Image (cartoon, helix red, strand yellow):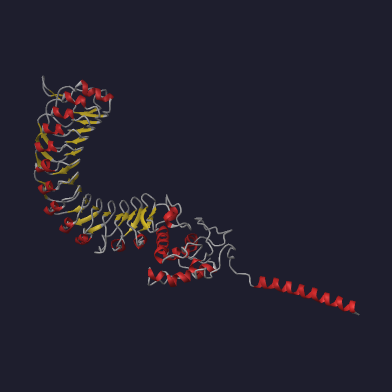
Length: 535
């Protein structure tokens, strides 16, 4: 009997074990997750050793594919889901929990009125979902540093990040200071963003202005559109903003007195309206470039209260006279005023800007008066002086011979007259000299042959007489030489013709014309061996 009982007990034990194993298998199958599983190398959303639930890693989204073929993917990238379906529907449970946590504990400091659902494809929510995945949340860091990850992710999404030329590291789990184009201080706060020439698209994002320590944002020569968000002019740390050569529209927004801007470049866009008098609130502004837009109205006097070293307003439709207050910009080194629709006389007060190294007054047909001799006396630091396509008249003052640092002198397309002063031969650093399209008379000064650095020398369309100076054979760097549209005569000097074997590739004269039995008007010059063209 005892052996039989022992056998029955052992058999019952075996049956019990089998039953429990089967039951365990059924439990696993019943409670299997309905979505893709969270990988085993991710921590559950439980407090860390420091008690912070936000430090735990969560499920990662798959890498961006720029494709709507999600086959083989567990959690398609947020950007791909939005591009293909307009909603984010495939989200791991732990990412949902992290998203909810961030909406409650982080987002209110950025967007107090946040009302986007977790499946929304707003750029802000896409950035937050990215923040909610993997370790993109930043772990146990302050909300200020967390804000950097959010703001840069938002910028990437809003400005067409997947199509950028340079985007190494962006939307990776690396510290943002390692992302290409991002420069940080030693506390890991973003200070500079350099995204120039980087194929940014879409309406201008205000995300960089969310950064609490940003000093410079450079995004020139991209395809950015839309209006300029006012937040850029409210940021208390931003010093330099370059949005030039984009497709921005609208007016300059209201400028806060809290701004700290030192440099502002909005050139080559489609901005309109007046230059606001509130520009004076940017009381530390040193460089201002508003060229090549559609600004109208007059130059506000408040502009001239700023400590500017560079001012460019060329290429707009500004009108009125050039205010005499412009002479108050004592530190100004570069000034560009045209093309515009200014009227009145060329201001002599510009001679008070003794720090000028570059002055451009171009394409202002309504600007008249006489060329001030005081420019030659006081603007002696200038390296570039352009006075072209205006109605300014009179002669070139002898005092211009004192501007010995000049490298570029363009006086073409005005109503200048009388003779060309021999004193210009003292400008030994000249590389470009344009005197064409005026009413100069007399002969060409031989002293100009001492300007051995000259590359461009243009005299066409005046009323000059005489011959080409023999001294011009010294101009071995010369590439362009024009005399057509005058009343000069004689034969081109052999030494000048020899320059064709050097750098001279454009040499234009008037074709010789027999006006009487004994008189020839025009330059005798063989084409193409000596002159390249005669007209």
